Image (cartoon, rainbow, N blue to C red; front, side):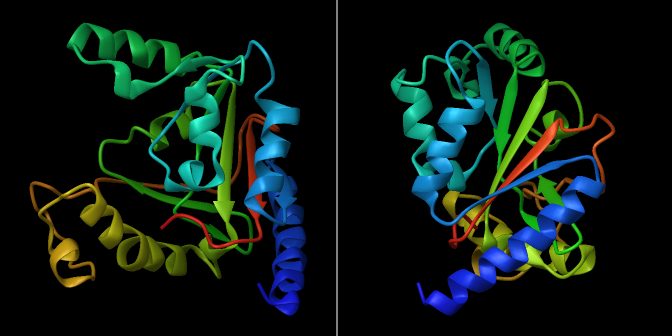
Amino acid sequence: MLESKAAYYKILAEKIIEKLILRNMEGYYAATKEEALELVKEKFLTQGVSAAWGGSMTMTETGLMDYLQSGESGCIVYDRMTAKTPEEQRAMKANIVNADYFIMSTNAITMDGELVNIDGTANRVSFLCYGPENVLVIAGMNKVVTDVEDGLRRVKNIASPPNAIRLGRNTPCAQNGRCTDCLAGDCICSQTVITRRSSIKGRIKVILIGEELGF
């Protein structure tokens, strides 16, 4: 990465972190995904804490997904993909809602510190809003937008089309690369959540990474 762009990302992240603090959220900056992974290991996902997550390509790209699934972390891991029967799925949801940490990325974050997310089944945003003791949001600086309206445009036209393709969904955005505000059966845009503040101080912790990660 160009040195000037890296410096810009750091300056911008520091300003966003100031806004996050005003919104009762914590903010951290890591220049690289490797630094971010070490930060998560040392400060948050320590031995014995319980952790769960929502769908996140950023988690995969940082190596955090492999770290948790390998057993190396020493964390109590609640992986929703391992729940196969309806009974197992209900039990898993109960575990996740009571977890110490719920990990996710965000579809967008505004320069003013607001989180913008759109979900299909609300498997991310429901736990962002309520439940787990802490929410750890990990996002590359490519997710930064000017405001909420810009964030919604980003989610619909930049994040959702490749995500729909990844999931094998038969949606207009997967076919033509742009949002048509569809009501298709395979639509992955059912729940829109704007997080403007955390009602519990420090519950939401945002790690901004000076790289382009995820969708």
